[in-house]
Image 1 (cartoon, rainbow, N blue to C red):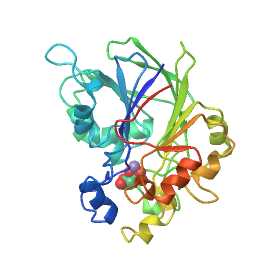
Image 2 (cartoon, rainbow, N blue to C red):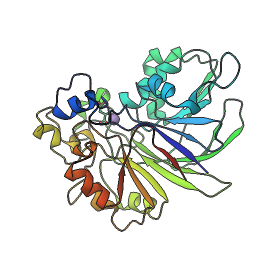
Image 3 (cartoon, rainbow, N blue to C red):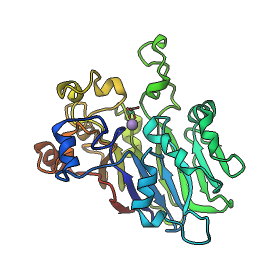
Image 4 (cartoon, rainbow, N blue to C red):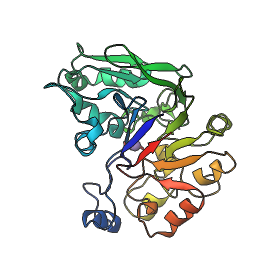
Length: 308
Ligand code: MLT
Ligand code: MN
């Protein structure tokens, strides 16, 4: 059985976002809407070793808020065995910096994401003598290992999903896709060889393809990109100039939206994560939240615990 903790359910910036004076962000500041930290999960197959799925800039708070991640023995210890990264966005790698000090860890990421970590030498504060970086290959399942080399009961297969290279790596000269490569955005298919249980984690996705639909079909659990409710919502709200499509995210609603795309896929539990602070489903009494729930979706929240 997998235990999955949603450490952070918001997209980049969190909810409230530091510089956002919107009505919704102010509700979150006033305690009238549930605040959310940035996008990350912790996953364990044995209840002892935990893997971060993405490391958000809010990781320090997320560890403090989640007792399973507190040190259990000795003067220096962490149940966090490693991190698995799905892209190089700030909200997914910034938290690695919280893991400095000499605690053994294994970081799993694609060659493209590892190249970004390498190019930004501040990440070398994760002492290379203790923190191993392992390259994951699209379509190839690997066993997540604890730092002492033992199996952690978790097999992870990364697969490419439509997306966009991280904002700060966009190449304006490279045409419509800004130089995006298929290793830039991945989903994770996580399986237990022992029990056969499995789930999928896709926190960023620009479009539903037939291959992705097939992969998601009949899964018992999917945690999926819930960035926006509708493509132009940041423009409508007056807080930005970009559409969801421009940012590499499909939206929840609409004919080409996520809710419609999952119809007929027979997914057991469908949970939105990576939810932007403009998304009206963050507000418990919104019609949009009711519509998502009526379509069988759950709105992820910080501290949500799921077993599969
Ligand atoms: C995204 O998910 O689109 C990015 O995290 C946005 C950002 O870099 O702020
Ligand atoms: Mn993001």
